[in-house]
Every structure is written in structure tokens, then in C-alpha cells.
Image 1 (cartoon, helix red, strand yellow):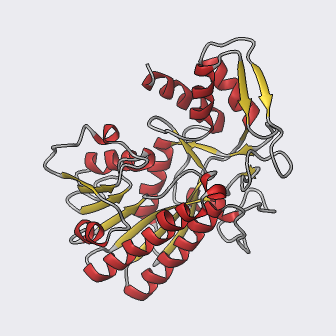
Image 2 (image 1 turned 90 degrees about the horizontal axis):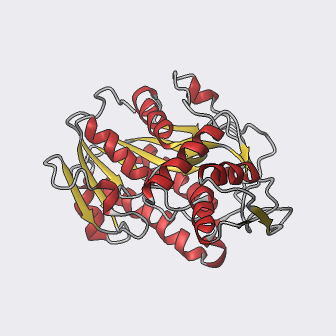
Amino acid sequence: MDSKGLMTGRSVLVTGGAGFIGSHIVDALMIDGAEVQVIDNLSNGTLKNIKRWLGHPSFKFIKGDLLNRNDVEAATEKCEAVFHLAANPEVRIGFSTPEIHFEQNVISTYRLLEALRRSGSSEILVFTSSSTVYGDASEIPTPEDYGPLKPISIYGASKLASEALISSFAQTYGFKAIICRLANIIGPRSRHGVIYDFIRKLKSNPQELEILGDGTQTKSYLYIDDCVSAMLTILEKSRRKVEIFNIGSEDWINVKKIAEIVTEEMGLKNVSFRFTGGVDGGRGWKGDVKYMLLSIERLKSLGWRPKLNSAEAVRKTAKEILKEGR
């Protein structure tokens, strides 16, 4: 996760910095010697994730919301770089409450961009987008230039809309933008997603595990340390005004295998798996992309490689989440 002094002494804003991925970015930036400011409304994040930095002279936390103009203007006033991670991360919620993704992902991104335009101090914006922008891709592994992009979830649509806004603001107002399309990022501090859900369900009922879908949903999983090192590699080595990079592992794993790894790590035997059957051909929920594997050739050309494959990342994450829950 070494960013090689890239951000030392620079003023960096991390939106959503108390969340899962955001807090790991904060750790890397603080260790690198950056002046870090976090804005987070704590709807998904928690101060526990950044407690080691609270009170540090190079760290400032703002409990605020990107939808609030005063909050976002205060946060962006003198920042030189922005890592924009604030969003509602729960894909499933878009089916029942699409307005949440529109407000927290699209409008909040617009408000941030407007504040950056007015302050004029930021030179670079790094945005965590998602593999869901590709929808049900017919080309797997899916490269960055795949198209047309047809998201099948409101979450994916909100990320794609944010990408378009960021690209247009960067080109129009003269800052650099890096768009990172993430596979499933997993690791300690994660509080949503399949591994966390399985552990929670098995603690409640160690005999039976409900699995959404038909169990054949197969996707790429990347450990958080690999994700952070990828983002910092891109930050260091990318050159164009607007860059788009996939970040993921080179393989994938299905939901049934993840369930087996989690039950093993919990020391449970003879757990019966109950598949819900799912919707639209075995998906976990409406808008769930059933098969996802990103091409990471563009990222590998910068010299980056993931240290863990999908199964290793799942196993390590299960161990870490179980350790946190003790």
C-alpha cells in the first residue's frame, strides 16, 4: 500500500473516509504524510474505522453531508486532491428506493464537483466507480472500452452518471480525473456484502444458511490492500486528463464456494445451504449482475498485480471479520 511519498505534505480530501474503502485510503494517505481531511455523514461509515487518526495534527474529520452546500464548501476550500468515495454502497436498496442512489451518488457527486469548480484548488479527483456500470457484459473479462454501457441496477446507473459528470467537469474546468471501476472489494471493516451477510446469518443459525439466488452467481473479489495499492499506482503513473481503470482480480468465485469458505472459517460442520432460487435466472436480487470478471490488462501495464486471488481474498476477509466480531 506504499504510495512512495506521492501525497506527502499535500492537502487531500476523502469523502466517505469513515467507510470501509475510504478508511483504508485514509490509512495509506496518513502513513504517506499527507494532510488528510475526511467528510462523512456516518450513515454507512463509523468513527471506529478512523479512530487511530482522530486528534492527529495532520488529520481533520468533518461530520457533514455532500448534499449540504455549506459542508461541502468547507471541506473543499483548500484541498489539492480528492478521493471521492461517499455513496450508498448497497446495490439492493436501489430496487425499493431508487431515490437514495440518485441523491447520495449522483446529486452528491454534482455538489462536490460544483464546490471544486468554485474553489479551484483541487488538481486531481479519484473516483470509486463500479463494475456494475457494465451491466450484463457479453465480453468477459470485460475491458474498460466495452460498450454500450447498459447498467441493470439503479446503483450501476448512478455510478455511470457520476462518471459522466466527473469527466465533463474535468475537461471543462481543468483538473485531472481518475475513474476506478471496482470489482467486489472485500476485507476488514466491511459491513455489507456476501461474506458479512453469511457470517451474520450463520451466527444467528449455525445449522442452515440462506443463500440468495441459485448459488452459481460468479464474480471477481479483490482484497482491500490490493485495491488501495492499485489506486495509488494509478495515481502515480496515469497521465491523461481523464483516465478509466478497472480494478479487480484475475479470477472469480461463485457464491456457493464463498459459503463453503465462510462455514469452514467459522468451524461449522454439516451446514445446510438453502438457495432462494433468485430472480431473473438465479440472480440474488433484481439488478444483481450474475457474472462479473473485469479485464485488468490496462492496470497491469502500469506494473501492478494483485497479491491475492478471489478465493484467498474471501478466506482472509472471513478471518478478519470474524476476528473483529469477537
